[in-house]
Image 1: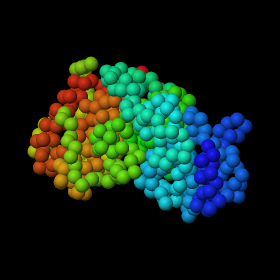
Image 2: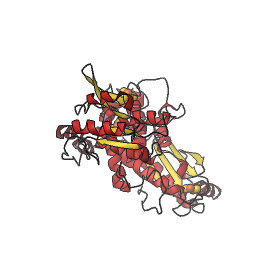
Image 3: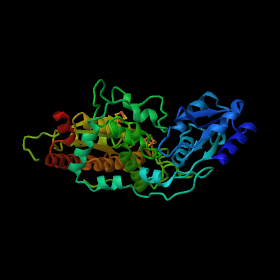
Image 4: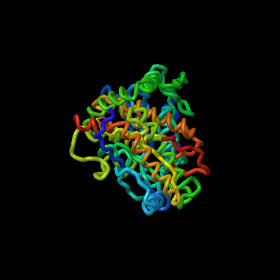
Length: 268
Length: 143
Ligand code: SF4
Ligand code: SF4
Ligand code: FES
């Protein structure tokens, strides 16, 4: 922890970052906190929260950066958070030159729980690299179901949705000003559960963008296995377009038409 | 599932420059095809969002047909590059959740291919007829 605190202290004191988005213990709860040079002593209390206490720090950075567009900020990132930043750079929401990473590697039990394929960032200031989980068993199980059984299962899940929008609101990758989930011509209004397609529409938007942080699933009061849906959406993007979400170099298939079209239509 | 009284509802998104013109040609050539299809004309197949397709299923479509220009012939040059990416992705996602990917069909049909248009509609209608009503519709009714 001291190594991380030293780095943050230095960044703030030397003015390399106008602020640091990290965590602090508040009355026994690890909460996101914005550290600044003016209150440098607070950095003594900067922590890495336990694996299962997580907030969408990328989303907080989006807000802070929008308010102070010229400033550079430091931010605590896990593997997923860094993938998120990379996607946000690609989608023009943040400038990589104005972000400094303070990296945290997730512990093995967290990576296993998340079935995370990239449980550490490119910079590590705290923790040790652990083993990634390349294939999600939760996805594999659903893939193995007969179509009718899969549908029954999903309809059961979707039917519990209370349309709180928690999944969208917590998502670090949801940055649109207008949301098609609220478009009255595209989604029925004034009813719960919402249209059956609600979660599928979200899955489409998250394909190649979801960085698999799992916050939506944790936020969902209806215990809908949202992550399974988005993990599959990302796996499809990988299979069809060879695009790895959060890859620092590859170009998202949804951003460009492409030089050539190699996909074939499916036979009837 | 197959119910002889079942009249499938099929929604088609056809691009203005190729498939819609192909449908027009089928019409003026007096080619016969089943009347279950409702057509929405769009400027380019690349302007059809997967959300539109899902919305159609939500609203009770038993099948959705997307028609665009052949690759290389899109009047916006590469609009249909995006069409096929989106629709292939959506078909696979529909399969994963058990929505029967075959209910969504994408075909390239040019302005000169009136007979191909009529045949595609015939084949697709027969296929949907055989599959029966969309399970999404049944779920909506049960709710
Ligand atoms: S796991 Fe959920 S909250 Fe996290 S990026 Fe993906 S969709 Fe958004
Ligand atoms: S968080 Fe869960 S209950 Fe709330 S809108 Fe999303 S899927 Fe529905
Ligand atoms: S104009 Fe026909 S597919 Fe683009």
